[in-house]
Image (cartoon, rainbow, N blue to C red; front, side, top):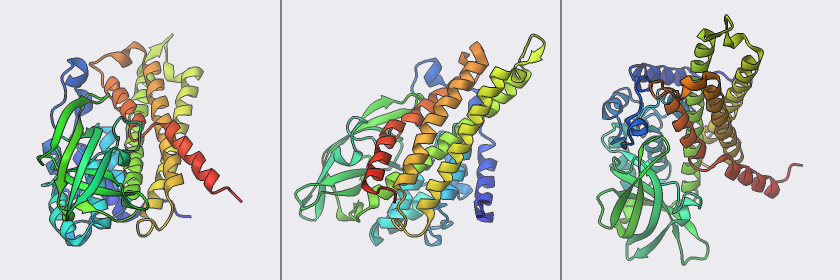
Length: 380
């Protein structure tokens, strides 16, 4: 089998490296972590550069000004973004736009996709439910009032909610023979929407989004079966790409430091105990990478739902969550006290890694999910 990336995929990754190459966030201590201040807004300048490089429309069809590419390309770009801790809603925005394209009606796609591809309309997704431990689709209820949809409920820890124009909210539809999940595109300024500030582990500004009798026109709701499952799988896989990029950067930093730091007249990288730990983390990276591309390929192969991706996504998330945690912990250990110095960027990567480890659910949740899948479909 040929595991090399296509020319288009390599070109997108190269374009991403060109844009993110001008970002130097890891050279400056985070105000949120050193002073307690909350980071305000995302990097609008970088967002404009991504739009100019056509990196916000990778998954969109040419009819909407996009490139018509797939989840693998998005993951390649996200991998580069994480290496510099890029403060942009690239994952949530791209995944939401892709879901609108795949499952939305003509009115919604015509209204949202072209400006989203140009970066003029910013999208995010509510994924953490009411508490962060319950399914997101159960935190908000949706009901009909004539042709209009009415939403009530709470979503916690919504990323970029203060900056997004539209928040994609999964909601369960009660009162039918079988409960269904719909996706509502809720304007941030809509009547009945209240945001309460929260702060992530990495110091970024999140929001608890409270919805009280929020009325959404039919054109702003996606009712297609499987839309939420597909969007959630893409978001989880994208978070694995972020974890991989971050971990690769951290391991590179560790290799550079241990190659220069001397003890007893020798670089500590030559010590067996250091070399073994670094080798173990390299194995983690390769496992994270292999499982990521398997999951991304499952999502990218054919129409949404053509191949079951749940098992591969769960495996990728387990490796990403456990792997990124082990990489940053080993890096802190091998850097010694220097790794905790807020004038050195490693502490920022550690904080972002913890956020990514738990984002969209910890490894244990996906181990349970994988067990349920195996129990439902035992191997022959």
